[in-house]
Length: 199
Image (cartoon, rainbow, N blue to C red):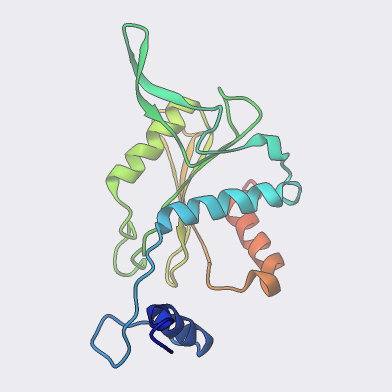
């Protein structure tokens, strides 16, 4: 590096680290670098929505049935003087009509606890209330909280006391894979989680 190129030292060190397969640590070392922060909850949501849309036919869907961020499917929780209040925006709404979708998916970027650690796996009560609001307001029979997979967690399925045909499910999907090599396996896993054969 010269005095004209010294300003690129940080990015060159970062590139060298990437090429060598290293990753930064949050402790003092000989190299200085910078941090890249990503909103993982948003990336996870967008990845799942894009993947389902891209492989819609595989899941027995049409791309037009898949609505990320409830696009054109938004509803309000309540009304006051004919004006909607508290907008509901599920991450993914799947269905032909706005009033009775087939499936609602709410993605959550969170490391769950195993079944041995917690029977609820660390799922927040507020998340279940949110899913309940989606299920009842959208009149949707199948509603999922989708988390990244953690070993030791079994999928959970609950029904509503006042409507046993409405399910609230906790599902996980493994993200620890190279989609260039394991795309089919990921499709199968997603299909089994989101669209299981009826029991």
